[in-house]
Length: 155
Image (cartoon, rainbow, N blue to C red):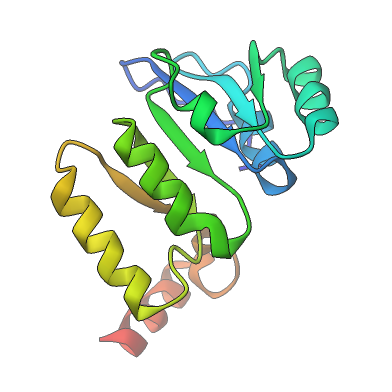
């Protein structure tokens, strides 16, 4: 999302908490100034990076523990950009707190984790889970012809 600077009004406001600011800083930058999607909190194990991103993008709240960020009532969606092996743990924490989740790929790292995702989505049916994959707009899938070829390959 970094650098796209597209701010399509969606008609409903959502507060977003971003965890994992190595990759997640691109989302913070991309959403800065959006009329409906506000990054209200950021989280990373690196407290200095948290403060830097807060100052750079006027993010009101910063945390080094996801468990604290998910307690915020003004955070509706948790965007997970942490190392792959932490995704399942962070999705679970967010779902248990009643939050929707956007998680970068890979969503899971094993068949057992895939089964756990199914269990979580069944246990928390009001929570939405989205796998963020922005690279579908690049490379072979960036043209109509390339997209058709990709669809045919998986069909």
